[in-house]
Amino acid sequence: MDGLFWAIMAIFYGYSTYYLRSIGYSSAQIGIMTAIGSVLSAAIQNVLGTLNDRGGWWNWKRIFRLMLGFTAGLLICMTLIRNSLIAGILFMMAMIFGNGMMPFTVIICFEYRSNGFPVDYGKTRAGGSLFYAIAVYLIGVMTEKGGPIMVPISGIALCIAEWIVLMTMKSSRHQQAPEKADKKVGVNEIRRRYPAFFLMTLGLVLLFAFHNGTNTYLLPILERVGGDTRALGTAFAISAITEIPVEIFIEKILKKISSDKLLLISGFGFFFKGIMYLMAGNVAVIYLSQLLEIVSYALYSGAAPYYADERIAPGYLSSAQAMMTSCTMVGAVLGNLTSGWIYDGFGLSSMILLCIGYAAAGTVIIGASLKMEFKKEAVF
View 1 (cartoon, helix red, strand yellow):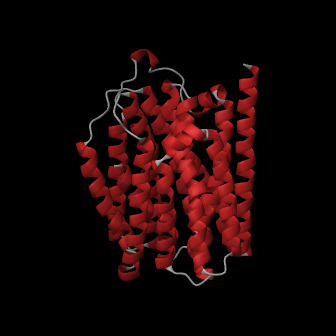
View 2: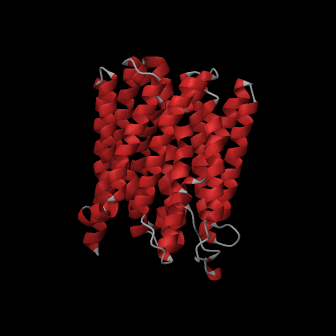
View 3: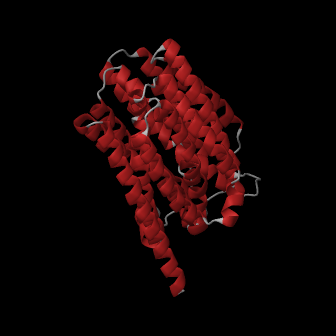
């Protein structure tokens, strides 16, 4: 299930710029579109996480099925519509509902674990990276031969496959206790109870401003050094494959290095990846920069769910995991919107420098979160 979800995400994370440019959107317009989509994605993730914490009719399987159905329906509409404005809106809406599923790929794993199922989140997430790598490469090949229409068509096929897998899965035995149904949950309550955790999410937002800004405009970065859409697929595939070893062995790594320190290390990884983008003189250097995924996004994707699970009480965990995943959405708003403006107004190098600044600031804030937690432990 996780693998197919991340294959679906390859459409939105890997080919949004390509698709939207192909139907006539400028870089600034793409930044605005993805920013609006990301704001609404973050909102829906936190609402759905809160609903799952409250229990009752809203369980993970029903929520996931609803979001998947909306995503597939919108992708089908994209293949039938020729108006650029409407097609762009449909793409944005599909991205919102697709992102709505994201927290539940984590919530499901930890809920199954808490009920005694032998689920290893790291290996599950590694499967997601493998499927993502395969998807971005194959979509790159298909778009080279069939054009932009292959983006929604491949998404439809993947949604159908995901639906089939979802129907074979059983809901976990976990149920919220009735007396807890009316408790306060959500972002504000977590901010009040867990200030260091909240500060960590702010730092992660800035890291993802870098990550999303550079990923959205990786095609222009590649084109500057002679690359094309096939090179884009190859670059994304390299980064996704590089994540897999870290994710497979994340539980062993966490026995040596704590989850919060791994998140700090990931900040430095993002920063140096940006430096390589800035200095690249050919496509090979861009490919090499994707190897830094092992100490940037791979560490985040492996460590972040454990960081939340270790610090947040069970009754608030769905909301906390939704906050962690919505960091990518809020970061996308900041990164895509400002990157588009800077790219159009000042050029590609200035845009990359802006993203490097985000990575540096995010790393500093994550360090401050660790310091706050250390002081709290010292007091107690």
